[in-house]
Image (cartoon, rainbow, N blue to C red; front, side, top):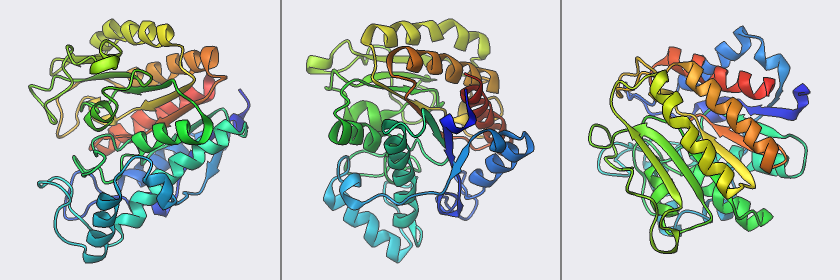
Length: 316
């Protein structure tokens, strides 16, 4: 694949999305990934783009106006929590979160207009925020915004959202639980053992969407062998729904050694997921695929896991 088929978003505006005072989602996550990308020479094999801020009307495709105004207010004050205690505010939070969402939107525009076939944004995949509230370190849910934007701007109905973060993507799942056209597949640590305590196998959608969602909880300490065992369910599910666009949330907190989770995947699982999804994107979506970094609180895992995803996207 020619190098100009893939773009990646890097810049201080994305690095600014991070919490202070020892919070596990710190501002260094962007920089350790960028350093590994350069060390491996992958930066020379793709196009690097500067972050882009989202317009308010794009954020409003997913989030309520009242919640957006709350984020603006807390962003100026710079203190207090947006939720019950996981997501502290900081000065400039609104702007930082807007760059996360806006870079994802810009990637979609460039993919849909044929400039690139695939894209990666490391500081993205904030899958816990709901339409009306923050949650789990996530201010704006760029995944949900991406889904709504693809539909609103480009008429894409069957969006495939695949999530391999250790935590269940509850902000996406419950926001589209009754939507039969969102193709949702999520491998995560069993919710009985980890935040947010959701994503059980029997949660397959609601109403007209019942039976259209795939949650695959795995036990703590599950390794690459477990990942390989369950992965075919995702491929079979995706092929049966014939997606028009592929979104991958590739959280590195499912890699062994993360300080707040208990899975033991290696970067090889992340590389494999990306490689297989590129094949599916080529088969059904004219190659259209966007990967988002997601969680991850061990810096070495972030560097190795996300560069493994990028490497697979370059080679596929």
